[in-house]
Amino acid sequence: MDPLVITVAPVGGELSREQQPSLPLAPEEVADEVARCREAGASMVHLHVRDEDGTPTQDRERFALVIDAIRRAAPDVVIQTSTGGSVGMTEDERSQPLDLKPEMATLTTGTLNFGEQVFENPAPLVERLFLRMRELGIQPEFEVFDTGMVEAAKRLVAEHDAEPRHHHFDLVLGVPGGMAGTPQAVLHMASILPPGATWSATGIGRSHLPVTLTALALGGHVRTGFEDTIHYARGRLAGSNAELVARVARIARETGREIATPDQARAITGITGRDG
Ligand code: KMH
Ligand code: ZN
Image (cartoon, rainbow, N blue to C red; front, top):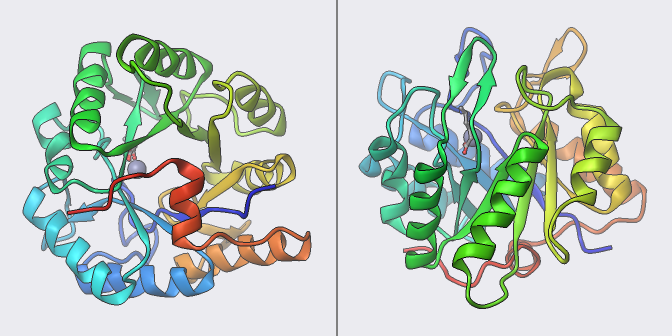
């Protein structure tokens, strides 16, 4: 098995301090939290940012500020920017972080109900984001919430990639509106990915541990963090993102799996460009 890539998603696009009092919001808070997560075993950060009053934003300048702060606190960590943003944001808003040429960015390849809301990803929008990533040498992480999104990602690369490429996916399971966060769902999703693709999985809310443990057992990689679960255990809020990362690293080490460094994470997930 490859060393384990642990991605931390410390902020999210929807969460508030009322729900999770330890949520990092200001650039220095995010950077310090990422540094602690790096120390605990994370090699990659899935990044959302907030403006000065904590409101989710995809503003390019705000991303640049937070990325600079992270680079000072955790110089080697892989930074993966979100193109999902928060539900309801426009394509122009969502695509702004790509201008900063991050090493990796997320790409959700279909529309789904997202709780009471709709996370809109019509095919032409997905195609434009994908082509922009290819143009700028940004490795997409296909964020797939159901099997239709896997098929959409396969169609996209079949249509646009002249050369064979390495593909990396994140299976996001347990969103109300997406696939259930069960071991069976992880198994099925992993079984339909393109040959040679690498993948991580994340279980949202109460599905977090079953999905994490199944991904570890199958040799996949893992995403954790407040974006995905605010709890450490039933009825007990996580004290920090680093606490969630440390648990994943501990389970992996206990079961003989090494933890990937950021450079190993780059090699495993097919990152070829460096940010900036
Ligand atoms: N906030 C969600 C609506 C991504 O970052 O690319 C979408 C999301 C996916 O978090
Ligand atoms: Zn996200």
